[in-house]
Image 1: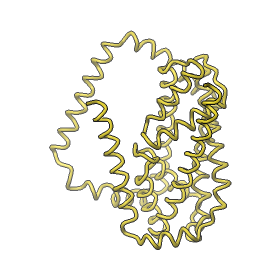
Image 2: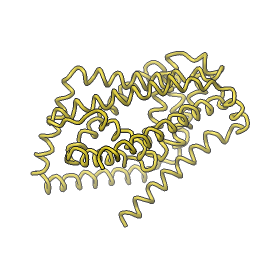
Image 3: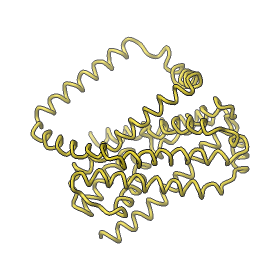
Image 4: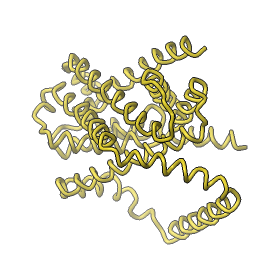
Length: 316
């Protein structure tokens, strides 16, 4: 039952992604999107992919800093391989990539799953908090545009569908979750003390200046991976560096949705409609979303294959 429920969840996410993809392109001519794509300058893939790889290196270096806080020393090649393979797995099964990274380190360096999983969870938490801070900055800089975007693409679709019954159901679910969490804590409080110690050690990485330097570098790479693609098409080449910040944040939210293919559909829908607010046609907005997401996906999957071959040869 648990497995079938899991498969059902993944199927629902996949269907949601396909629905969002259809919503993104349904109001434009597919032939027009293809025509825009034919005019693109794809030589930009070279610097974009170089920046993307730099982001990978910064991420594993930051991860290495965290692991050293619990006296775990893993070479960068292994961390990079596990990261690339994990990203590839996430494209097929969202969130399974994190467990895959842990399993690979367990095999290569006998690192217990709980320690590596906590380090990745804290890493994700830091990235989420950074995204929220950047989202707050976005609201301040583009308050009118963001308000209009949320109203037009989110609130207007929910308005009239949210009833008091929905509110009651959600409240009951949160209450049940809180009670269940409490009983789990009572049952495993000895283990909790152990995990609390590991978490405290890992959190000490946040006091190291280089941790935040690498974190900043990661987000700069995300930014450049968006901004450089603006020069693919003539219509988007006039967008500003501030517009790139807007698209990056909106796109990051789309990629965060647990849908197969790296937020397939969600990313395209949000980026295409965000482009409209910046004066870009929906057709070109869709083309831009396809280019950014599509080429990055190819790059991710190619790196996954290379990393897997290297890992198997090294740790067989």
